[in-house]
Image (cartoon, one colour):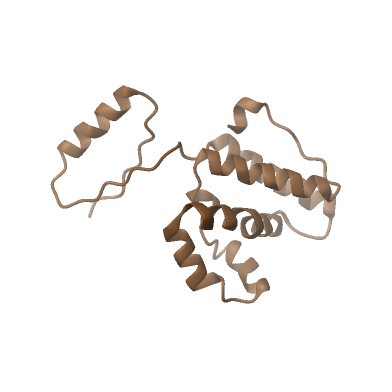
Length: 150
């Protein structure tokens, strides 16, 4: 069985290339098309930086605990709203669990997938919610150049 192929389409030439790839595959296979671009490396780096900054400033939690909290409180609502398959799995597997267990499920080593499934637009919404919440808690977070966040 072949690995899944994900290709962001930014230009017409990208679409032509994917059509050629599809034409050269032997059925059966599945094609999935979704709107938007995948989250960016800049967004991922910013999230990790902010987790470290919050942990250092709050002093009572690790960066991984901050990440788990944010995935549960900001990421899960976005993904439940926008992704039917995610909503079904989350509601069946995670939602019935006690709060502390839900937090554990968001963190390593279990790391229930949330932000890695996001589009660039969803990740921007997530980072905006992250920043707003922790700023209200008194944390000062590094602000990127706007180009890097979008």
